[in-house]
Image (cartoon, rainbow, N blue to C red; front, side):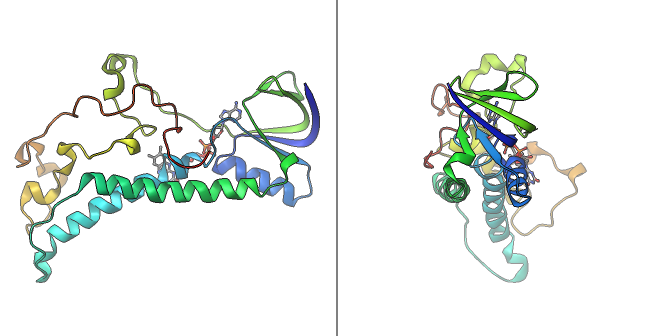
Length: 225
Ligand SMILES: Cc1cc2nc3c(=O)[nH]c(=O)nc-3n(C[C@H](O)[C@H](O)[C@H](O)COP(=O)(O)OP(=O)(O)OC[C@H]3O[C@@H](n4cnc5c(N)ncnc54)[C@H](O)[C@@H]3O)c2cc1C
């Protein structure tokens, strides 16, 4: 087993771990960053960034549909689900690649790929390959979605934020925007008066699971690993 020692071991190369690692290095500490997954951070891969891309696409469709109130006629607005999702993934992959490139620029001895577990108060074992002793450890291992037991029988039909951005088309029920419900130029009603049953787009359940059988957490991206 490879033996290494350091001042600070940072477990997890997410947003928190990267910030801690950089701060430790800037303070002159010998810091080591350990990452079990493909990297790229939850924020860029399956969190803040792809979700905001999707929301922005929805806002764009909504704004186009409601533009008549400003005297701007756009004609019928059609949402191209596969194109929306392809762009989300393309941008998401760019963000993830940017994060990974940043990590790749750290000195090779300062980051380790693998899953860390504690083997005592001052030692980590990484993938049974490296024994890393440290003076201080920072646990920045983030979180992951949990599917409640009652929903597990639905298998891959349950989407989490780890799988959502990999679907190839938007479910029809999502395409039911405010404009579908209340007309393109009508003011948006208050949430209390908004009734999904008023939707003119028939809600459909997801097509028989389009997801791969067992999408592994955050690995489905086409981003380089
Ligand atoms: C859909 C969605 C939208 C979001 N939108 C926003 C938003 O708009 N604004 C906002 O502020 N936040 C948002 N968040 C939350 C935000 O993304 C997270 O809070 C943040 O990314 C968590 O960062 P982190 O560094 O704690 O964890 P992560 O980025 O998850 O990093 C943890 C890392 O630790 C690694 N790891 C775990 N265990 C080990 C181990 N034993 N050994 C080695 N490595 C390990 C994991 O592989 C992972 O890479 C959103 C989250 C989701 C899911």
